[in-house]
Length: 158
Image (cartoon, rainbow, N blue to C red; front, side):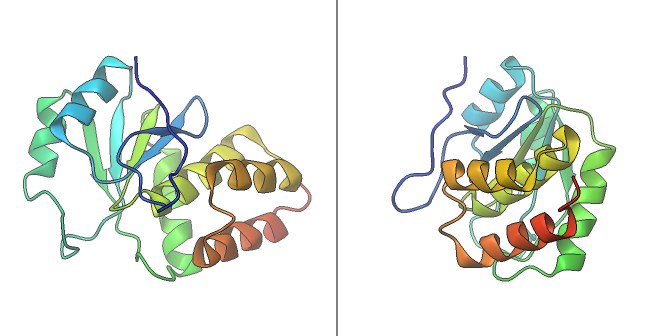
C-alpha cells in the first residue's frame, strides 16, 4: 500500500500525496514509485514537465509503460504558468483514465493541478478548495495560490 505524505518544509515531494480518491501528486517519479502506483490501482501518469526541464527521465514513457500504466505529457510552465496552460491541462484530465498520478519536478505543480481536477470532479466549494490547498501546503506557494484563487473566483457559484 502506498504511503501518502504531506509536502515537507522544503516543499519538495518525492513520494505520493493523495489529493482525492481519483488524483494523487508526486515529484519526479522513479521506477519503484511507478511500480507501487500500478500496484495501488493507478491507471495513468500525467507528466507536467517539459522535455527540456532538468532532471527529466529520458525514458520516462517507457518506464511508465513497463509498469503497465498509461502515460500522458501535458507540459505546464514551472514558474507562473498561464491560465491557458492550466485550462489545457484540466481539459486533458477530463478524458484520462483514473485514478491519475500527476507528477512534475518537485510536486508543486502536480499538487495544484490534482487539487483543481479534484475540485472540478467533486464539485468542491470555494471554502473546501481553500481548506484542501492549505492542507496540501499549496496556499504557501504564491504562484500556485494565484491560480487556486482564480479558480475559486471563477467557480464561486459551485
